[in-house]
Image 1: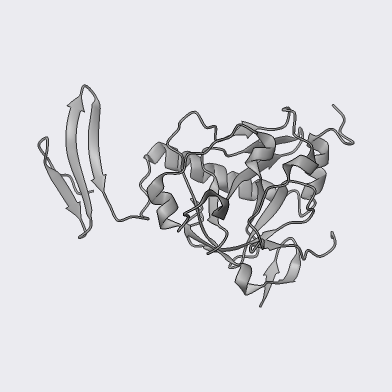
Image 2: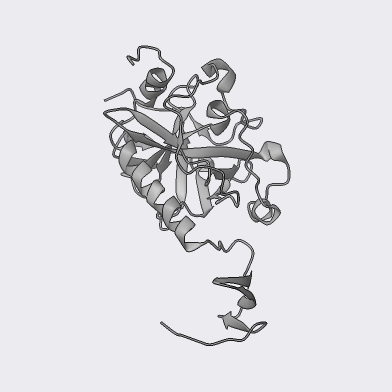
Length: 168
Length: 83
C-alpha cells in the first residue's frame, strides 16, 4: 500500500511492518497504525510515521544512546498484554521533543514506547517511577558515539523501514 | 457528574469489569484499589495530562525539522555545531 505523508510525500508501506499501538500514544488515541522510518542507520533519531494521518509523525530515539543507564521497569502485565516474553523481543523508543532557536532536544523517559518486534504490537507505557523525567534534556549531555549507539533490533529486524525518499 | 458517597471498604462498579474500592483515608489522601481488564490503561490524571501534552508538543515540534533529523544529531554531538 501507499500512504501520503506531510514530510515524505507518497511513500510505499510494507504492510508487514506496520506497528499497531494497542496502548495508544496519549492524545493520539485515534491513531494506532505507525511505521518506523530510519533515515540514517548511523544516527539514533528515527521517525514514527502515522499510517492513518500523514501529517502526524514523531521523532523517536533510542534512549540508551542518550542515557546509557536508563532502565525502564516494564510491569509484567504490560509486557504480557504486548505478548513480550523475552527482553530481546522488546524495542524501547522514546518520543523526542525538538525546539529551535535555541536548539533544545528532550526525550520523554517517563513514557517510553515499547514495541514487541515480533508481533509488532506496541504501546506507550507510563512508568511508575516519578524520577524518570518527561523532558530529559539531551542538548548538553555527552553522547555515546553514534557507532556504539545503534539500537540492537531483534534478529531479522521486522519493523525497520529504510526506504526514505531524498530530502525535499 | 455522578456523585456517590461510599464507606471505607465499599466499592463502585463501572460497566461489568471495572471495580474501584475505597481502601483507606489518611488526612487528605485516599487510597483506592482498581480492578480493570488487563490492557486497559489506568493513569493518574495529572501524569496523563503531562504525557499527553508532551506528545502533542513533540508532534508539533517534529513539524519544524521535516525529515532531516540526522542534522539534529550532528548539532547535538557537536559535529558542525556552534556553541
